[in-house]
Length: 95
Image (cartoon, rainbow, N blue to C red; front, side, top):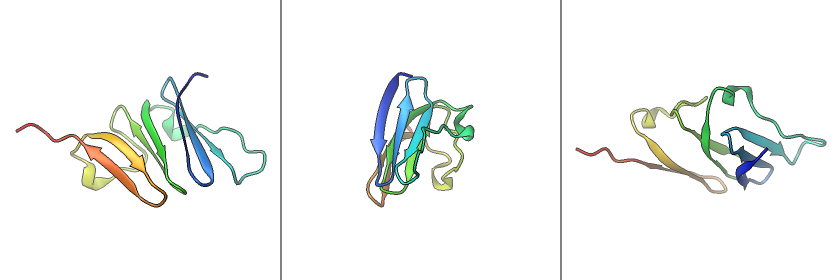
């Protein structure tokens, strides 16, 4: 697997492969292996980011397992996680 990017939180690490699949490694589970979740199988992920105990993934198709309704009509350009917070950068539509 070729790796595109890596980020880590307090108890987990996310790895994004060059073909857009995220994998998680959980530090708190003994003998844990990299896992790719089934809900990402149909998605192409372009960015990952980790907070201490939460993670975000930005998909190319703007579809995700948990939609943030306040952002439903906006295009998210960039994600960032801190220890216990999240920030999103949205594209401002031209009028």
